[in-house]
Every structure is written in C-alpha cells, then in structure tokens.
Image (cartoon, rainbow over all chains, first blue to last red; front, side, top):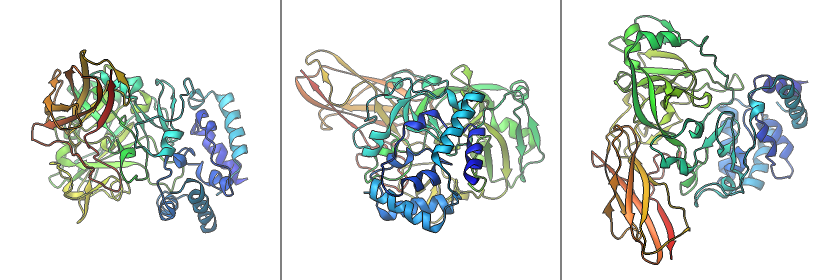
Amino acid sequence: MRSITLAMLLAAAGLAHAGEDAIELKDAPGRKLVEANCVACHSLDYIPMNSPILDRKGWERTVAKMVKVMGAPVSEDDARAIVEYLQANYGK
Amino acid sequence: MTFDRKAFDRRRFLWSAAAGSGAALASRIVTAAAGVGPAGMPAGTLESSTYDTLPGKLPLIKRAWRPPNFETPTRYFSEAFTPNDAFFVRYHLANIPEVDATTWRLAVGGDAAGKSVEFTLEQLQREFDVVELAAVCMCSGNRRGLSDPHVPGVEWGNGAMGNAKWKGVRLKDVLARVGVAAGALEVVFEGADGPVMPQTPDFAKSIPVWKALDENTLIAWEMNDEPLPHWNGFPARVVVPGWTATYWMKHVTSIRVLGQPFQSFWMNPAYRIPKGRFPVVDRFLSQESETSTPITEIVANSLITNLREGMLYKADSPLFVRGIAWDGGYGIARVEVSHDGGKLWALAELGPDLGRYSWRQWTFPLIPTAGEHVVMAKATNRIGATQTFDLVFNPAGYHNNVVQRTSIVCR
C-alpha cells in the first residue's frame, strides 16, 4: 500500500516527465531495488550521467548523502545492495 | 520505502491522461543520436544525454529529466541575448509548482528587518522604480563535465549559462520598505519549488547584506522583454549580477534579512570552493570557514561559438572565428585568439558593450592555410584577471575557465 501512496503523491504533484520512460538502467541484480528507492525523488538518468566516474567509495558517499542529507528512507541493507549494483554497473 | 515501478508508471499514465498535467506535455520532439556534449565529458553523460523538450522550451540538451537539468546548445550563444525558450534550466528539487502570478506573494521581513511586508506582483511593478540590465546567468557548475578527474553532480558541458536583459526592481528599494537593521548580516531567499520528501532540505540561499544592497541586485519578472518562462522562475526571480546562478532564486516567495549567518545544507557544505585558489574579489565573510568559502563571482571566461571540433573549413579564404567572453562584472578588456595551439596570440575585435555584467561578443578574422589549426580564445577582464591553461581542480567542479582548444581542418 505504501508504494501506491507514493506513486499517487508523485503523480498528483505533477513531478514525473513522460520522457523519463525511455531511461533503461542496466539489467543486473539490484536494478529493481535501485529503481524503487531512487525514482521517487529523481529520474534515473542521474545514474548513467554520473558514470563511469565513481569508484566504490564514491558510490558509497553518494548513497550515504541521499540517505543522510536528502532523507531518502532507505534501509542499511538496501543501501548496501544499491551501492553493489551501482559499483558493478556504473562504477569506475 | 520501496514501491513497484510498474504500478508507479501505470498510475502516472492514468493520472496524466485524466488531468492533462503540464508534466504530461513534456515531449520528445527531437531525439538525437547519443553523444551530446564536448569531448572530455564522462562517457555515461554523453550516452544518456539527448535533445529533449520541456513544455514551452525548444529542444535542449537533456542532462537529467527530474529535477530538470537542460543545457543550451552552443549555437544559441551566437546571439547577444539567449532566447528565453533556449535558456538553460537547472533545478535541485523536483517539486516545481506552476505559480499563478495573481495569487503569488513575496514576503519580505526577517529578524534584522524593521517589519514584515507582503507584496503582490502588481505592487512591485507600481510602487518601485523599474530598472533593466543585461547580465550573464551561469550555473556554478557550468563545465563540471569537463573536470579532470571527473566529479559527481550534474555533468554540464558549456551550456549551463545564458545572457539576458532582466527587468524588475532593485532589491535594495524593496528592503528599504521593511528597514534593514544596523546588525544585518545576510539576506535569505526562498522559492516556491521544493523537495519531494519533506525531510529533504529545501533549497534556500543567502547573500551578504552588502550584495543585497548593491543597486544591480534585482527582483526581476521580465527576461528579454517577456515574462520569465516557468522554467526560469516565473513570476519573479532574484538577479544577482556577477555572481553564479545559485543565488538567483527562481519563483522567489520569501526574502528575509538576518542578523546571523544562515545555516543550510545549500550554503555549507554545498556550493563551496577551497579558499585562496581562485582570483575572486568578492568575499562572503560570514559564511567562510577555515578551508572553504561560498562560490561568489563568475571568473573570466570565453567560448568559441561557431567552430565545431574536427570540422572541415575552406583554406586560404576568410574565416571569422566568433565567440563570447564574460566575467563577474568588471567587464571584458580583451580577448586574444590563437590558431596554432597557443604559440601566437592576437587580439580579437570586441562587439558592442552591453553592460559590464553582460557577455561581450567578439570576432577574429582569419585566412587559414591548409592543414590542421588548433583555435583557442582567452579573455582578460578590466582588473587583469584571465583564464587558466590548467584546471584548478576542486571537488564540486566549479570555476572551470580553462582555455579551450578547438581543432579544425582547412583544405
């Protein structure tokens, strides 16, 4: 139910752009988790745009900033798995 | 928090179809081949960028959809003033309402103001002197994508900037209406746009009170003789000539005078440069730390606007190299051009002076011999500040004014 609530919020606020639909992240383990956790606040093209420039530490810092500074409600386990995916597919 | 992307997409589609939102109007009029941007940008940026269209805008270089970050293609910089529908778009946070100018209010006050006053747009336009000036609006991170090594952020090429005529009222006149206390230190701006999640720090910026009281700092509602486009801050934005666009608050709704330094993520650690590394004059002392300081004025810079890297031109016939040069408001004194990779330099001819905060167009006539020519341009301002040949690396990729090289072939 939480997911539907968030989706409704995004739509009601007019936050999403149709052009985003063309963005396809690399298909690998963890992709769904990344999409589910990141897309509420920003389109997914922020990920390929910032590649391949970050190493594991760089992605850890970025994900930590999203959680600690931007307030993304991501569990520690999910954050680890997200870093894994980003490092493996969009890392330096 | 997690959710199902498919459900999200379905919901969004249904809502868009039913309500006909502004967002749903975003279309892909032009989708170019991958590789949008100068050489030296991150490979992923070049691959994921497209020519795409926000409602009311021409196709621009899409770096990121939401929050929207769209860059102006270089060809528009051949004009003195950048067309509003080609002007770059930069947002930090994705909750961007369409503001109704008739219900919009600007609240002016703060703990170091004598009182609080709320203004309608009509009041601003009627009750104060209306002024206009030309000024470059440039994102602090313009050319971040050219940093070596690369740094994270919106990976801009050369187009996170534009030049426009801004019409509005002086901020100092509006502040005089509420009264600025002797101990006032900073003036804080907030806009109507905000975060998606309430726990995300809302975008807010402060400037020193001396800069707020500068006669050139404006609250503007017009840009190039037209109302501000939605994506550039309708119905009113702050214009801080000479300083990077992070302070030019779009959709401004609140202006507060403070007697102490404004604390926000967006002031520190964001938008900082290492102290003492750049030739800037304007300092923001109340926000300085031992090692870093807020970015302030734009450094001297230039861009060749009509030559394309690797393109073929005619040898032994006139070729006019054209470009623009700009700085933090001292004014451009000269532009030097080289076409042999920097060995010999000669003065370009400067175009009309449109004001010290405007960029200056320039032309360099050349009759190239057959072969490869590496064309470079270097601007110097009226206080003798110029561009660097080597990058002054900093973690946010700011103040990149490295002299650029464009290789062309003449036959």
